[in-house]
Structures are given as structure tokens and as C-alpha cells.
Length: 151
Image (cartoon, rainbow, N blue to C red):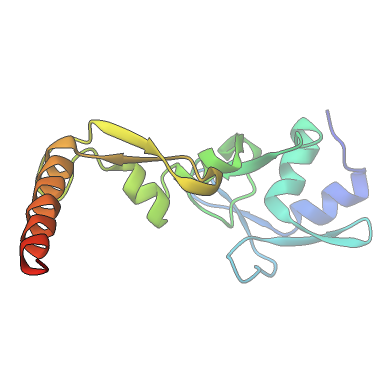
């Protein structure tokens, strides 16, 4: 496709070092998150997004670029893929959301077998029905004990 001009491509390529893993590592400045930055058409842009744009064209609305290689400084377009924000957050990530999404069992070792809708459109929460039933039983017993004391 080739969406960069020849001079833009030369400038971009001059900032890349290829390593043994196949990554094209950005050698110019990185931003605070570890992504390469490239000044293109009057704006600073993330270098991996420029690499994607040059190879594949516009990034679809609502989508982001994910590094398959897990190297944020990599600008090899073959190491990049278009995903939704949710997929990017959960995929091979060390975020709390990703870690919890990969869990299949509660702290007691029971399988998460139920879900409930959380408030304010935040999605669904998984839980274990065995622990939920035990909690309900404990609360009922506590409330009964409190009722007999208040008579």
C-alpha cells in the first residue's frame, strides 16, 4: 500500500535497528510508556502506529494496534495487529483486569460458575455459587442473632 512518501520512509527507517527476534526496534526517543515517537506531518505520533499505517492504511475507528511480540519499541508491521481496546487490555497483559479475566476458580478453589450484571454498565462479575451460598447463610444467621438481641 505505502502511505508514506519516500522521504518519510527513509527518515522512519533510519531510526530502526533489527534484532535477532525479528523485532524492528525503535532507536529514537520513546515516550513515557515505552513506545517510539515519530514526528510526521506536523504531529508527534507513535511509531508503531505509523508503521501500521504505512503497511495497511488507516486504523479502523475504535481499534488499537497490539504488539504480538510484546515489545513496545518494535515497529515491525508483521508484529502488529489491529484489536479492540478490550482485547488489547486483556491480551497477554499484566493489568488487574487481564489477570482477573484469566482466573477460573475462586480463592477457595471452586470454579466460577455464575455471573451477575454490575451497576453502571460495567459488564458482568463472575462468582462461585458455593461461596455465595455460604456467605448468604452466614449473613442470615448473623441477622437472626441480631434480631433476638433487639427484642
